[in-house]
Image (cartoon, rainbow, N blue to C red):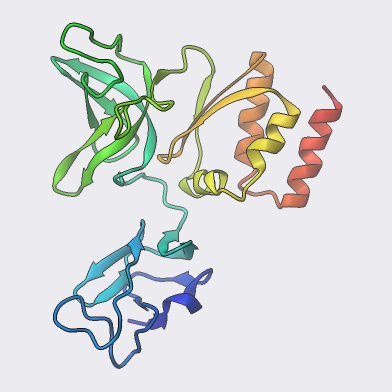
Amino acid sequence: MCAMRMEEAIGQVVLPGDVLLLPGQSQDAPLSLSGAPQVARVKVVCGPGLLRRGDDLQVSKCGLLRHKEPSVYWVDSQQKRYVPVKGDHVIGIVTVKSGDVFKLDIGASEQASLSFMAFEGATKKNRPNVKVGDLVYGQFIVANKDMEPELACIDSSGKANGMGVFGQDGFMFKVSLGLVRKLLTPQNDIIQELMNVYPLEIVIGMNGRIWTKAKTTQQTLIIANLLEACEYLTAAQRKHVFAQFADGM
């Protein structure tokens, strides 16, 4: 088991079992989560790949340690199967409609549930029109190893805020979880560059699913292929490829 300072490990490969020392900790005196600490506590949000184990912050999967201000840390890996995380926005496929609850395939080890009341404006008399096979964009309100994942299509104020049933047309495809995180990074401009090539609609789920729609079926398929290729292209290569399609419009 290797111990390293959190700030020094950002961008480096970490392995399962590695211990990350929070700012203010030392290898001789790790941060104590109980009792009176000798140093000021540091609040850290642990994303995928990181776990609390007593007084330690441990790595649970292999990958690159990432950091988002002010204190969010996660491990970026080429994991293929999605593991639900509370707060994540995902794309689900309705598989079962049973009473007041819908079951959705989210690409994880088990399906997620979605109450018919978890839609904007839904009441017992005004039920949402959701059918088996529909695509739903929602957010996890329950996601832990001991409970069934639960989605909602409203935010804390009861508004849809872009969530709900969508995608009557268009095309949905699967990409790696690493590419999804790359596309959703605030400083990333891949989507904006793609919109300069073809006008489009796009929905990105943290579970590795992307839905997109352009003016024609051909343009929609080109967009899907370009997005999949972005996982392996450098910024310069990507701009060159996008420019070729823009010139051919």
